[in-house]
Length: 314
Image (cartoon, rainbow, N blue to C red; front, side, top):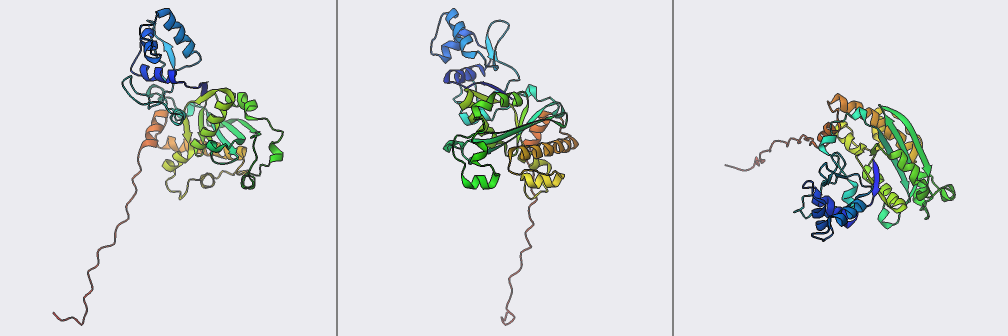
């Protein structure tokens, strides 16, 4: 994972234009800024200012601009004749380029994340009350980060009943903008992993955007989706069921640190199961997760002949 300045309409247009291949800076600026035939020195200055701090843009040896290989770019960005635009929801679900898929799963490091929040919808003002990230490297837990967060809004009683996080516990805690730099340091360079990953990813990207003006980018994995493939025999894929299957004890259930640590331990076991299935690289994993699982159809009972009344005469 990494962070970068938030997308603007102009950078979105640049991604759209360059997805068809490298382009001369005059043509590029002419398209994205509606300034056809701009002086080259002006176009160069505008491009450098626009793409500063954005790793997905780079210069070629002959001076053209292009998209950087192996840097995640949203799959919905099409060629310059396409009409697709990157939405805020789509930006969160970035995918790695094919050239980056040969990395061995065991060689990657993972940030297994869990968040506790004031509710289930960031769109209606819910905020993070606690966040944890457990770093897994070489098949072992290497680092644990955990902190309470002042959500700057009340915690509903039913949330306190679930998480045991009270307002008194977070009243003097740091706000998210104060913990954001150290949290981003922990996340940087790791694959994002969570149980029901979209929930935690959306809350974190929203909070990071609000606090820093940057957006979280990178590869992510959902342990629920992995469990559906490697543990099809389980009736449910909740964290409790998966942890019970692997013999993992969950301490402090529904607290960020306890849930993240249990998820990390389950991830290590899942990586072993994936290896047993011949799934060794990131590309292997993506193919495996996309594959469909055929469900056995229940056999219908044979049709029964209609009963004939014994009192009926032929």
